[in-house]
Length: 334
Image (cartoon, rainbow, N blue to C red):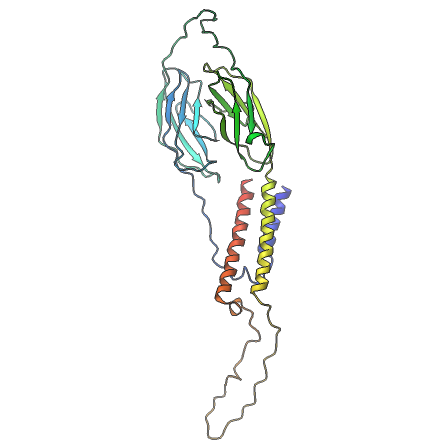
């Protein structure tokens, strides 16, 4: 909370501090309206077995880092928000039809509408026949855990990161076909997905030590022990860099204003007008150029700046406001 308060005070000082007219001449401040993510494509479904369905979908042009939320409408389960375009629903009933729909959320946490619904039935109920060497009517290897070695790292082994969006690197044995990834050690609302060696991942919010948990599965659904890896999310790295850049820009704008806007001349009294002496035979107005009231001193920027100079000052205004806007957006996202 201390660094957030410091950042807010800094922004207030920059906005409210006098800038020798640099900010006073700018009146065209724009407002940015956040737009939602694009609606993902209709899920493509594959019935992997009598108890499992895999869903994939297109991003519809959403950028990297977009999160998705797919829902099993039939039994009211979901994936929760995650980064990726594949999700596996397990623990389903055999010979049963299920419907699914997916939506997206961008980095500003603005959600899209749900995609069109897709429907798929699990495979028929079957019984695995007894095989020599097995037990309880199951084939050999049905109850065996996947073989390692298992490896898991974040950003190729980095121990710190300044972004919530990272890349997981995984390795498992030949009998591993699926895996589950979670920021929660209990894997709440987490299904299985096809085994991959690299997966984009989003850490939880707020800086500190973050832990990612992974389980690997065989084709029979038997899981390995949970493995995990830690990384320190240091959001202050980004905030400190923005503050440093903002201070440099503020100092540069001050220098520009001092160079482009000359200091006001000292106040001087208007000279006494010459006494009015009418000329014989000539009609003369009582008010001449010398007798008209004149302003003591003009301090307006428009009287001291030429056209190109005014454009430079306005450009400096835009740069400063853009920097302040980026700082506010960053503060709201952390």
